[in-house]
Image (cartoon, rainbow, N blue to C red; front, side, top):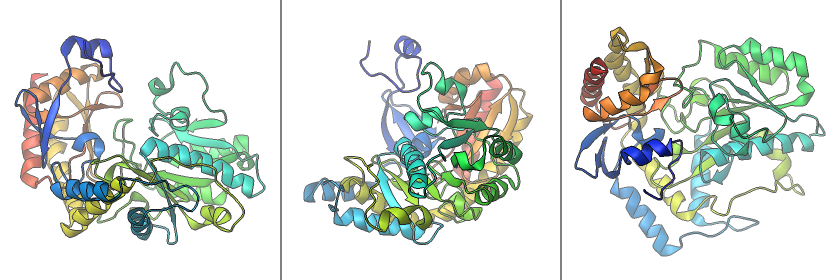
Length: 410
């Protein structure tokens, strides 16, 4: 029996079958310990935007580690590489003048936004604005705030109430948010968290006009609008944009980010805070007593800078835009297969193949591996597709062909 406790796993099943051990990655391919080669349909876990094996990132990390691996960013301490990254990320932000608080990943970023939302309203003399709102199907990580906001019921079951004053509204109906505001009062609501594309909940694209409508509702009722761009941030949304918030002109009060910031080469996240929310804490005399020992880690900052260099130099934002149409063209025909109920695609470098029988999701993952594809199940029986931006049109077609063969055998 192995000692590793896997995340999000039935450990009895893992122990019985043995783990799927990945030993190497190269571009859009991964390799297991038995020599098998697989198309990486998910870019790790939504994150390897630049593809696997980019030695430029490894070299940047090694150079930074040999200079100074890390130092605290608490108080007035800072590192040159972290300062450089903060300016670069702020310059990409859809709201000019934004501030950047670095974290270790998406769950940290969500917890930071949750706390800052409540703390902000205290500074505004409105301490009763405590309720934080999420949506059904939503995933915001698995820390205390993310679990409390969980729109995937299984992710919250068995823990009891972790954080009070959280509410859930329908993921696809702006009137559901408006109804909650009318019932509990805007004076009691601090923030609304929104994934522009529902990710782990099953890859659901926003209904036409939905994001614009909920943004206006939040603005009209003085509720902070938090865009959870852990999945969509740093290019995956397509249209040549770094963020979904820019593509849809959301002007969020806060954005949570992570995965694509370093393409997963090392852990890092960032909370991007608009000037209106940051101002009370930058005016002097007010502390936001929050932070992480490894927030803004020097080596992670070096990896992020190298990653962003690659995306810009190789025009990979255009690659993500191309993937939006490539995936739609290659995977839409799979909706005709007997095993498939629906294909969700057409917005950014993401697609989901929804199985007609969700209980067959793990069997489908096994069949895909037999045909040389690594994917994962999301939501209720959806097969996730979120490739690296370097995947070619031909590789997308090859991946769709392998999906078709696997699902026809299911």
